[in-house]
Image (cartoon, rainbow, N blue to C red; front, side, top):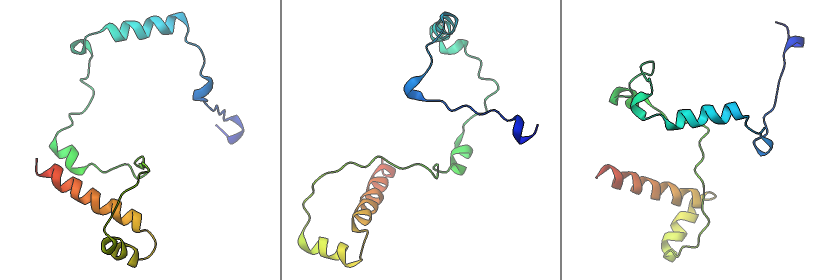
Length: 105
């Protein structure tokens, strides 16, 4: 197959095609199946060894929420003394505390 034979198609989630009656029936039939009827024999088991090697998607970016917070002046001065990125530093410090707390459970 050459480059000239290649066909591309862009999907637009805002303008998805309407489902046909057959597609709706197939989805309804699958939704009606109990979990025990689904064949998962071809899927590998996700055990502790799998998760030990797992890594966060490098393209993952958590959703940021804007808020107002009051900090002691000396704490803010210390954070700003490091230069630009003091808000990112605050987030990193809070994330470390959150993960430490979650690991303690």
